Length: 191
Image (cartoon, rainbow, N blue to C red; front, side, top):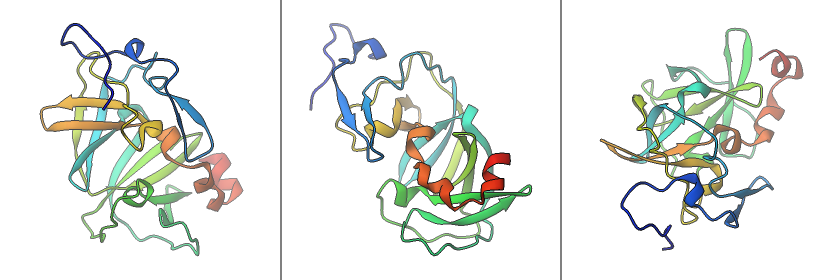
């Protein structure tokens, strides 16, 4: 497993990542590893669990967290796109984050949380297993995504927290643009 060479034990920074490391995104974009972290300052994150692993999103992209509500199902063959939900007069696509990350799908209950996020001028709803908390991230604590992660192109990096290692996701690279194709045009422009 390739690692950044350092002579001390401090956390690697974005500058420690080799600029030539590029991963191919499943959405047709090539992404330079470390590019997402360079110049980005994330000091707080909403932490949640999927299949026992900690994940997080920068608090700046999270609108709110709610418990599961009734979804309007879609006749779509994408297993990640599970339906639509109306929130404050806007129609929002709902994605099962487990399916989006190619994890085993789990059943939903009335306790299942939904995380509403902003991306590309739209709101999207992500279904997760459980929301942990909002946490302060240690200054300089975001390590660039390693190419060993299959979702490195959709990560801002990893962060060591008291609860364990958290994978900090990049909402703009995580949610495919096609998710907004199901939203009526007037809703997408206002939302």
